[in-house]
Image 1 (cartoon, rainbow, N blue to C red):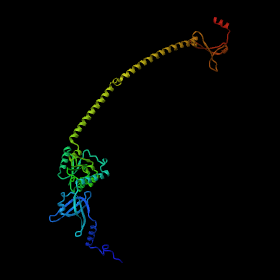
Image 2 (image 1 turned 180 degrees about the vertical axis):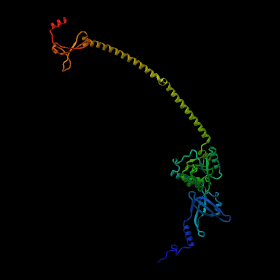
Image 3 (image 1 turned 135 degrees about the horizontal axis):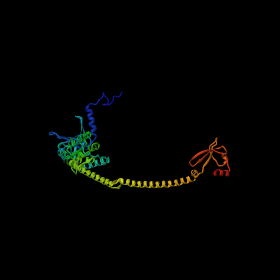
Image 4 (image 1 turned 90 degrees about the horizontal axis):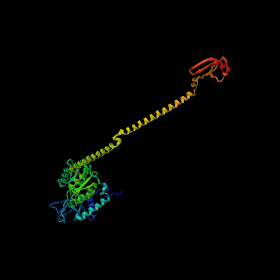
Length: 422
């Protein structure tokens, strides 16, 4: 059975020196490279000809260890300090004695203003293309925040201006202050951490990122990609008050509100107490005037309505109609009386005619009505002497009553006349 190569099994391991030498050989094959970054730490030991530098990536939490000749730092064209943006040329090196990696630098160049501005411009176009500057994503500030989160340098003029102006405009406002460094290699991590803490605090209504004016290099952390993206992720409205009016770092474009100065930020965050009281007084005056005008207008309308005849003299129409009803009643009563009189006269005439033509008047002149009274039927008027044979019972009706008689039969006219003469 073939034995595995050295380092591939626990029975045949590499010694430490073997691994260190091999890693150093692999790294040595990489060749020299140009690297851009920000000096996070520079160490110059008094009795050493070697300078030790920690080079940080401004856009990420990563760094490299650099070593270079002391004279390269001392005789650099610009003063090398923490926060200086540089471009270095060096060769990767693995120090086998301690097992550490570093970049052995042979040339250092400070990044010029033009290069910084060009890089910021490239980042601006990138963020703009991603929509981080879209005005539709901007959150509106609360009218009256209860607590203001403030990120600024310790004992800075920006902090003093914001707190003095804000409390002067609205004394009841409260602050939650986070002090950070505002320039140099440690600025971005501290500001991002403070921003996350304030954004997570439910009591904070608005966050202010404030710093006074400075050079392009001083304001470089506020154009950092990491900080810009963190501002865009915040759910709490963010106000950027960096530098003065000409200064325009990228965080101004990402923030929800850009203030020209810290003082301008204070004026944008809270309203002025005096101005608001004057506005309330003016609104009350205007509302009272509007109410009075409305009452006067409605009162005038009511007066006009009351002045109309139907409301001013509401019984006049009833009285007029009542008079008409009285006249109609008198006319109806007069017509009915006249009609009754006419009809009474007509009835009287008809009654007179009826009386004249009726049997009572005839009986009153001496005539009589003779009826037969048969035993087996109702009485009947006699029309002929044959209807009353001898012995028939008769009923004779005269003007003042009726009487009964017995028929003796028919008689001739002569005998009847003789009897009448007797």
